[in-house]
Image 1: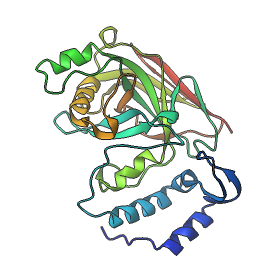
Image 2 (image 1 turned 180 degrees about the horizontal axis):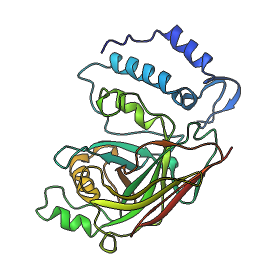
Image 3 (image 1 turned 60 degrees about the horizontal axis):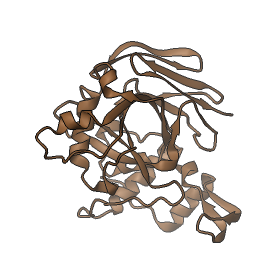
Length: 279
């Protein structure tokens, strides 16, 4: 990478100029009080700034920095779910935890403060209903299938790092911080759902049809991607646990909603899911 590490004084100026360094009287979740507060979500909602800070962070991290084993989120809750996906059926899935307080049941609402950019993606999510079988079990996939339900979901995105799949792996760590949440519709047993290698869907944003028809599932099959993720995750950030929702990649690509708009998706055999962005 050619990016330089941002000096502390320059970093403070970026926070001030973006409006992300707030002054006043703030009661913190720790019980302490402060005259200043860093509202990182405001800064990271600007894609160019998010990319610059992500590159600076990646440049400052040593090559042998260990992968974290846990995520501590006193303000947003612990790990409540996961996002995973892969470009093709033979690739190892990528993964990132989703903090518990950003998971919402449909129909959901997000304020402007919670989702300033209002990016949306229609996805297939799977929920683990019971503890997963051992990853090395010879009948792992069959036993896992019996413990999973499936639901339509909308990933709400506050920004997206430029470069997409070609971005530096460390830069992709910022993806967790610039996503606003995950909205899930009612789940049904996997045994009662259609095959998950494609989805017949209707996707509306602000009342206009954004996508319609039968579209392929990212990575070839949503349950197969979920299985690969379940084998890979291990104890990372606490591991995959019963009750967690795992979304498996965008069916529709990233689109943007206007203030006041509702995004509504319906996937045949899975049901409907919606989110409204208040002005």
